[in-house]
Amino acid sequence: MFRYSRGPSKRDRLNGRWVGSETVTVGLFTAYIDYLESISTIVREPWEKDGSCLLPEGMDEVEPSTPWTAAFLLRAKGQRRKEDVTGMGRFFAGDKDDGNWSLEALHDVLRDIPHCLHTTTKSREHARRWRIILELDREHSMEEFYSVFRYVSGLLDGLDANTKNVNRVQFVPSHWTGADNVFARFDKTGTPLCVDDIVVTYPLIIELASVVDYVDKTAAPLMALPITDEMVASEIGHPPGGRLFRLMCAGAARFKRNGWMLQPDHLAAAGSAASTLISPGKRRRDLQRQAQRAIDWANANVQYAPALHPNFFFTGNYYAREFQKI
Image 1: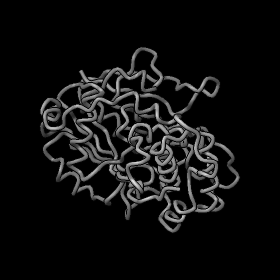
Image 2: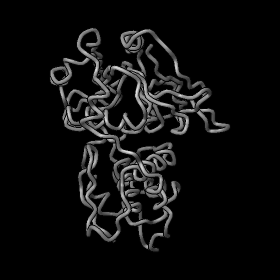
Image 3: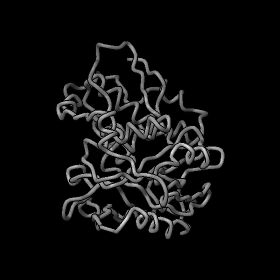
């Protein structure tokens, strides 16, 4: 039995819940890859995936329409929220966005594991971005997922930190306009990864719910900004793609580290102001949703430690720069 979840990108605007999310059962890992391959040639525009892409002139709004699949398993009538996730399927899916790895280099590392590799929306020949899908020998728990993530991250010198979330969805492969589109499957040979062996090497990490409590301990100082001028200056001149979200994550992490209260609308406003400097004229949508994602990331990855470090070093594939305290 091989199970995965799927759903449409379109959101029910009336109540904010994902519509049509479900867990489905297919025979084998190869059947899942068959499905992905069958739709990988559909031509799509970047704005069909999500609301963060620049729309063409004269187009005010587009409802994202790209469907998704995911390794998590949902309870009946689940809505893709973390509390709806009951466990993980017999595969791992993560993103490798840095390093400009070639298909051959990735396959060389993963050749002993049944796997599928395909590029994502913003992949370019000079900056490839990959989705990596690996078969596992059994379904696993959410806690075991973090062990598997650490193992695969070690194999590939890091993975996109955002794909560490158990309720992360993967938009289906497509022929994205303007992208470096590659789809390659190596799923009929090799041995699935053994979850039990991985957990022995990378013991379970049980997340403490109390870590979230630090976000709203105290109000921030009057002049404290989520995104400072120094942060913005560090991104100006860098290639487009993820810069604003990096800044929003850094701002959320800074407030979390200091135990300051931060609301999504406050961070979204700071992100809007930063966007006018790093991408003048670019229209942004869904800043409120991106702000919430950044705050969620900080809650899950940053510890409350206002007095321990004079500076905050932001680690991860996306983030490796130092921000000064106020």
